[in-house]
Image (cartoon, rainbow, N blue to C red; front, side, top):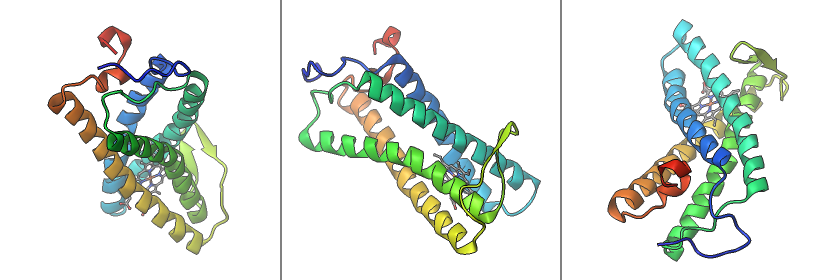
Length: 187
Ligand code: HEM
């Protein structure tokens, strides 16, 4: 099955866009479970280390998200896979766009929460980000809640996204997943 023909859109995702997709997928799949463990293990050296790593990788996701959106705006994205039903097209566009929003919103909520708590956001010990908010307990609680709710929505959408890729590959046996793979692998 071929992609729907829209001459104004590229035939493929940009190679940099594909590389960023897989790099960010790997980091998000590490940051979510690490965030859950870290928030629940109780105080200690391990928790502090996990907090540092979580914040650092979260900031890295934010930087990669900016790069990824820049690549997507410059290169464009291929038209939806032609074999999708109308429901699949709407559901996948909604999932992808919400994931993009969360890739920006989650780091910003985390940064605001940490600033309001007055802890420095050190990025891999290389540099420290400025505080985005004044020290304030109510503000901290608000962004902690926003980060928590965002984490639940993001986890559900990531699971849906992975589930859809598995269904397309092993049940429908189509080439949707190949669109995000390097050209040399048939993408
Ligand atoms: C896409 C990026 C991010 C994702 C997916 C993510 C995900 C998560 C998850 C799943 C949790 C556990 C929630 C809970 O069980 O309470 C968490 C907690 C936390 N995150 Fe993030 N996070 C991201 C970025 C960041 C950034 C950039 C920072 C700070 C600069 C940050 C700071 C925190 C803090 C301080 C907690 C602990 C909250 C608490 O103690 O209740 N996160 N994050």
